[in-house]
Image 1: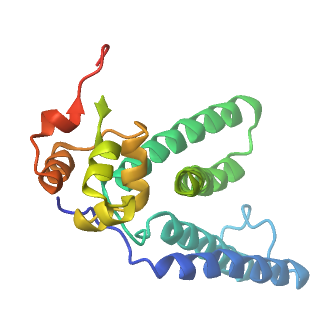
Image 2 (image 1 turned 180 degrees about the vertical axis):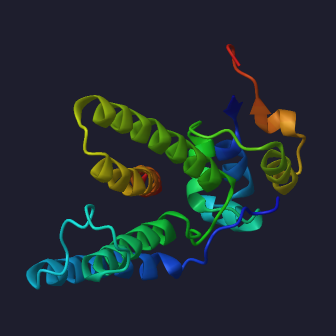
Length: 143
Length: 66
């Protein structure tokens, strides 16, 4: 069976580095007053906007790499878990999105949340299932 | 769907890890198939049957409700 396109396994670690790197960058940006509300600025690529692009991109690309990097042994059962987790992620994202649209009028933050909720939920659900499989494997091994 | 992989493995005296490496899947996959938590594709079922030298129907059988 032809494997689907996924990033190499090592990009997972790069992804986590990017996700965690965005925190100090964001905090430093806030500390020096560079980051802030720029939604009212008409001009693109000013200080806050660049910091915002930098941090949002670091996080989004990081999560993307973590979510779509190959497992050590990528087989059909893993592919099934991926598909299942992806379906759950879309479900959850849709529900969160609808709730936000009903109970909030902050479109800017709704958009931002929409950027990371599906990926983050996908990663959590997928890793949790892998963890469960590994735990059951260990338990069976002891029998 | 039921399967007799655990029994076939015992007859052939191979571990889950051995079987996994013979058909290029992870140990987790063999474990989930044996415990009926994952239904393998036709390709994988045929590969497993080939390892044990038996027809697929002898290893995998339909259950009521399938």
